Image (tube, rainbow, N blue to C red; front, side, top):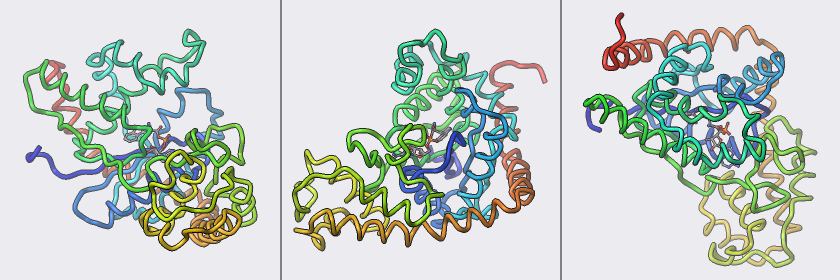
Amino acid sequence: MAKFTPRVFSGIQPSGGLTLGNYLGAMVKFVAMQEAGTHETVFCMVDLHAITVPQKPDVLRHNTRELCAGFLAAGIDPEKSILINQSQVPEHAQLAWVFNCVARMGWMGRMTQWKDKSGKNAEAASLGLFAYPALMAADILLYHATHVPVGDDQKQHLELTRDIAAKFNHDYGVEFFPMTEPVIEGPATRIMSLRDGTKKMSKSDPVDASRINLTDDADTIAKKFKKAKTDPDPLPGSATGLEDRPDARNLVNIYAALSDRSVDDVLAEKEGALFGYFKQDLADLAVAKLAPISSEMSRLMADPAEIDRILARGAERAREITVPILEQTYDIVGMVR
Ligand code: TYM
């Protein structure tokens, strides 16, 4: 891997509002990697992925801009990082086509996200939903990204990305695409629903009380944590005491991630506390962390033209990387240019 420039790529779908899961599982890590300065960083609103399920055009446009505002408010600096929406960098879709011809039907059929989202009626799902992971591999490999920070739910897609890179390199006898490393670390790799600690917190859950949205006001955040499912036992003194207590573990994980501490560290302080008290502390902490982000998002959304300028500039910078990589890919594959 030594010949590849250290580069981070990650993406978020503009298919709904941002959740606390996206923030803690992804954005906080994006900002940390940007600030570490050891890698070039590229972050993407994956609008082409969003249309694998039906989207209303105006809502998609709004959500893409709001997601951009979320990136900026969380601390992504468009000078330090390249910030783009996927559809403005056409090489994503172009490389995805090549990867559609590398990936195998069997690989795609085994993706748990495909199985979950296509459900019992796979015949009616879009072809795009089935091919989704090839586009995701293209997002990453188009930048020769070496590291991809994500939540735990993306692990299988990152393994597939490595399979696609390996098969391409093998089939064409090149060492062109890197074996990208997933970065899945910390207490927030899997934030669960506030209503069911065995289910992932998700922007597509029909029950709004199951998640914290970055746009929720302080009252709503406090109410949602107050009503979050827990058990009657007090908090244990260490992480092992949370095994078999998924709802309790989830709230402690959220507290640890929001305060940038380890779970054991939090429990050493809170041992013996009842959830009535702990939830209040958690709500206060969440409001203190999230309120500035949500008000900055509203401020940025008042000037959508500025957001569009940032994305246009991001696309220009991205294409300095993506055009040459796509051209080399086309040469390897045998396209006349
Ligand atoms: P998406 O939009 O579902 O989620 C964006 C990021 O947030 C993380 N995440 C979570 N982390 C912890 N707990 C949760 N409950 C939670 N919910 C979401 C996700 O793991 C992800 O990191 N396929 C991707 C988007 C994508 C992408 C890429 C990611 C497209 N191309 C290339 C990385 C690299 C997705 O649907 O993420």
